[in-house]
Length: 453
Image 1 (cartoon, rainbow, N blue to C red):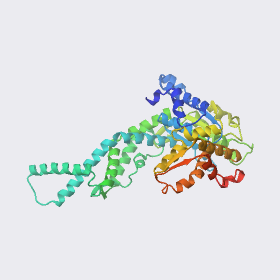
Image 2: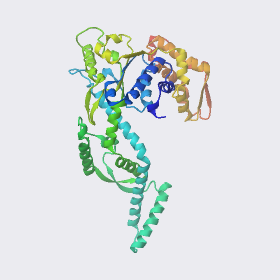
Image 3: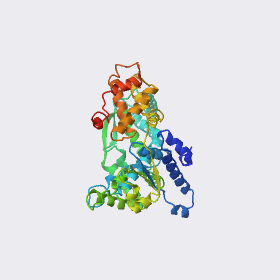
Image 4: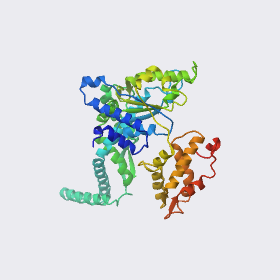
């Protein structure tokens, strides 16, 4: 099914594969995503009047706020950026300009579209690269042969020689043969997309052409490489030739403006809690004011051209355990009209997190140890004991949410991981008694952070 055809129910179902609970947040995110698709179906005049309904997620750490936003973006192939509000500051304080949010999102979108185009042309690029390798090998072989023949006979020999070399190449019999190829000094894909910062969209073609001419004129050199390494370099070069980078940039910017998602974490840290007129509180209020035009809708200059933020979906998040959403500037509160709370996690939630999601911790650890030939099995009482201990540790100290599970699992499985090579071919069962034994030395006090995350 096309990602644009996803209904809110299907979006929630997709999120359920990776995040346990938090039904209210899933429904709000699903509706917000679906409304953006509805807006695209309107006429130009109506569409211009409708902006994104930004969301503020309120709740403790480690309960899935970031993962909800990340998985939502992946479901619909939307450009996604996660950033912390505390990275930014107003002029006069050390920090980053809030407009860098849009520039970073544009970079992420260009990289995403570029990867998509590379996947499309990869097969053709591999074919062209193999042809270049065959030509190099034929030339090398011809240079070592002596004597001459008539032109017609030479052409016939050349065809047979190419076919023979192509067969050997396909059978990987020539992987270590050295050939000489032309390569770029900078082989990174990002170089192909380095534009002058802040150029207008009408200047993209001219600047891009100047860049490519400069690269072709100054960055090519000959190198002798084994066929296996030359193939990688040549495939990359052929893909770059087949990709229309102007179209990549145009598509990426359009995708940012129509489908971009920004997850703005720790927004509660911008609140002036003490009522002071100096220090970080003043800076935090300045960041809130700088965020206002970006969240409401502004045009920002990026290296790829101007980007409009009117329809980017901003998802703010914060624990708000020492402040309230109403402590934010009223203007910023108005930019996040939808508010949803995510709840703390119980022992039963931890049990579900351990076993249900497609990327559950137990599935990850089992897969890792399976590479060493160790079969890891978890009994039901063992899983519940891990969940109970994680919840108890959260209650005794800082509440890390589901992140605490990884700390407990590392402690429980440390011995197995260390001795995995010796246990190859065996099945290890982790039950309640095993978990209790491994966790016996962990003190459930305020000092326990010295022993376990």
